[in-house]
Image (cartoon, rainbow, N blue to C red; front, side, top):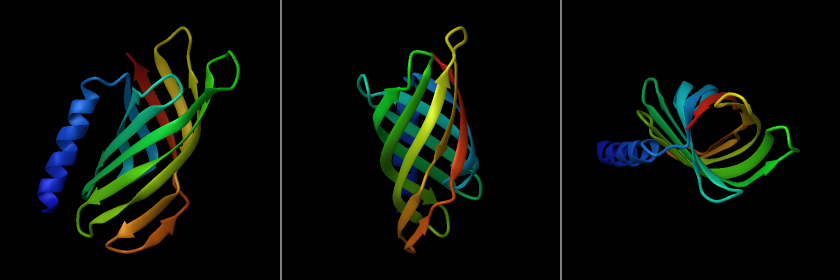
Length: 143
């Protein structure tokens, strides 16, 4: 069953990354490791999907809907707030809900975005736990 869920999630995320608008790396605390492939897809003018896949002892997958994505002026600085599911596909299996709040800067003369975020995580399946010490740094290329 875990292999089926892993296959479906991997294929779904792979299909999303083939049309990603931004793709890069997230450093810091990620579901399943300390480094993840990070991608962003537009879901409207002021919302987006933010996906991460990490590989370590298992595979970690986060898919967040940033329902608030607003500028903090005209200089390229944005802030965002979102929530979504996450899964850790290994032993022990974990399934939960993760939130995020962050800031990012989009360079005007280069196709690069750099951001920092905080992701509290409420784990629901296999064990029940709340983790609030997950911080990360994102570096993405803009297509």
